[in-house]
Image (cartoon, rainbow, N blue to C red; front, top):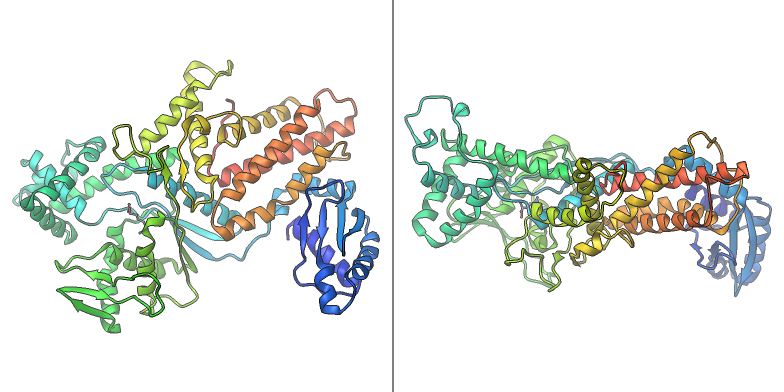
Length: 582
Ligand code: ARG
């Protein structure tokens, strides 16, 4: 049980001792700390249940609170609001416990398995800004879920299935018709064939081939035929496809690594489609498939739908499976291999119809039991100053590497610390750039759009990643400078700043729980900023290293160490690494 929860439970017991039962306390933090750090508002509600005067009830509760030396400054305001503060002794106890183990102030959840689908990068195609948000939010939610005790697994769910890759191979065939992949009589080992194509080439071929397929009927047709060859594992084409997947996957992995993002499961849509026959069988037997103009569809509309809900296209009229079908097959595979209790899809909010359709369609058969939760965790777009999704200068889609580079150029300029050698600068600037980008991405509520402003994100002041890194590194360096001083136990509190910091530390579980409930990192991002700003205020008010009162100095170091630990923990949840210096 977290320290915050323990505090709430003690108050409940106190209320009980006064003769009243409450299930959920109405306890609020107050912004007039001088009047009381917390406000207990239950007397009003209890007055109704017990048909008594709220003030009278408040007085009875106060009598009980006064018996407990953890509380002080107890008074009643208005009709029966009870103001209370935590005694210094209690605050120090909280601080010391958190310093020994930050987890002592986290509420752990039951261990259930959750699969989080937050990759969605497409093979042979450059990652773009949309994938950035999936990766940032998904990775952070996974880390948060694990911190809270869930058994969470990330799945990259690579887009490696479908026609775009048929077109890519069609284009490669035009460029290099002599490659043995296209030679039916080739008897050698395809894995030994050199492919004269790099990942950069693939990223250029992909849009070119897609464009050609739009304009040229014959090209489109051959691309389709090639797609079928890949999907039926035809020698040569299938081998080339595999090679392309490998090249691209290595690059995708490296980009995710730069972002501090990793997956436990690296399945692609093609792996999931191995379950297609079984899936089809289940749907056929259930009788929910309907023929419509040569296609097989599933009706998913409900009577009370407010918006149009088109049927899910299960098999297209040309016999191929749709994007929806790949997701249905994925659910079947996940059920069989991982038996998750929940599946979270961290995917652009603009795909909500897609997820509505598959969530409804999966309930038409009994692959999943009813209590398995499926949730689309949608997010808004990162926009340019014009309010439209962020583009390159010439109006093209902004790819992720370009975007990271833009931020890097900015953070590089800001590295002025002379102890950082010239050759170390790029690595530091890179870490700071990733922090800037990730923090800015996680700071707004995930559902809202936000504007990309590189100068603002990279600023060392304000609610930014660099500010948090800079401040956290400074805490660490203070602790290093004081490493000859004992930091066993905080014994004293001098000013209001320390009190505020401890009360903020106590709030940690509330923030974590709020964040996992809303599946958004904004509360954690705000909290990190608030805690850091409070600490910096304390830091500017006090000279820790030269303080002569040794007990006070030790207490301040414990405080610093605890804030440092919490910052480190939460930055890690957000997927942000702290450089040694900056
Ligand atoms: N590859 C898809 C895209 O780029 C995203 C996949 C999202 N995940 C899923 N299970 N549908 O649009």
